[in-house]
Length: 320
Image (tube, rainbow, N blue to C red; front, side, top):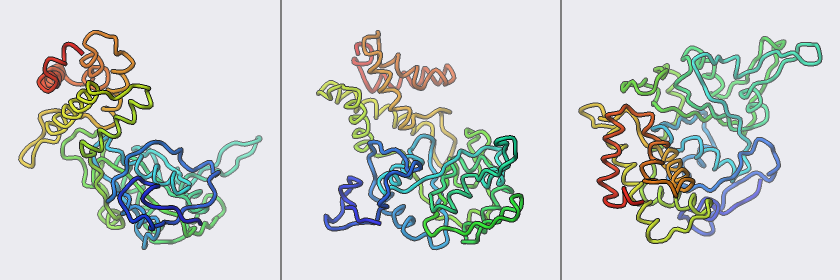
């Protein structure tokens, strides 16, 4: 292990002499690629504490679509040189798929270890994305693993894999394991209470406007677009549109939202990308908003979203 400075590594406020542990080996192919990322201090603090010592817990990141749950984990891991195994769950994914299976190789059947087996043996982070799409009865196979037990693979002659001290299990989901009362996330299942009791929890919400602006400015810089006074106003208004869409999507504690689509940070970045790519198109803001989001909305909702955008942008909506 080596020491790296917390503040400069993650771009967050921290004492200049505060260092954290990172792996020396930066050549492992399972280390995620490092990208520009705007970290939030509380999230970094909590995840670093978990990675340092899990105390027999797993970690569950929940939040709306496109809020950056998986990116948060991968970008922290990238800066720590922490290898990652990850897989996206679905309704037909079984526990044995995580463990491994026999496959044909050189005219004979060979057991190929799955992401869980590799992560356990090598001391990697295992990320299970969209965990709440997976059958709860299959996930119960992880209970003993989370508590530190070795993995026994009966189908491979009873192979026993003891847990590496650096193994960590992190999962993401649009729900918090209680199902989806809104009905907007198709396939989400309520998870077993005993299984959920083994997790620390984090809500990863959409970034604050200042953070999101920093993300979009970095994207513009990558696209070679200078952020002048005009573009600065455009970015501010795009973020206002996004937050109004999110407000109408989320609704209130008293009722469901008025919209069935939302604008994630991922979609907001897509809006910027298309706007820049088609900047010579007529009514480019409307043109790019359609292609990044509203073409998948119902016609009435599409019209409502464009009306919101027009109200926020004012005269710039038609002239940009």
